[in-house]
Amino acid sequence: MGLFAALTLGGFVLGAKATSWAIAQESRGMGREGLPWVVVEKGDTLWTIAAAVSPGDDTAATAGEIMRLNGLSSSLIRPGGRLYLPDRTP
Image (cartoon, rainbow, N blue to C red; front, side):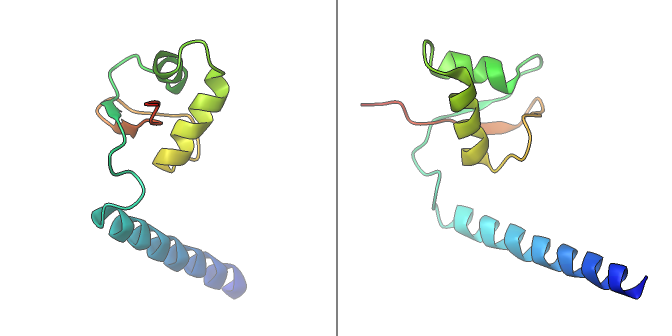
């Protein structure tokens, strides 16, 4: 039981450090600077946004790229959230 508690606490500490590192990188303008973005509207899904961003391309690949850019672990998105999009300018 003590080992489980220690591992759980360690996971929380590592997660907090990773989150603070990501916030620090974001505040320095690293990673997403200059990328287009959208605010998620009610009824939007990651797939509809991906299809709108790159019509005719592989929607699943675009959705995966959006997930990577935004650090999403699932395709669940919520209205009011900001999603950074892949830059498709030539």
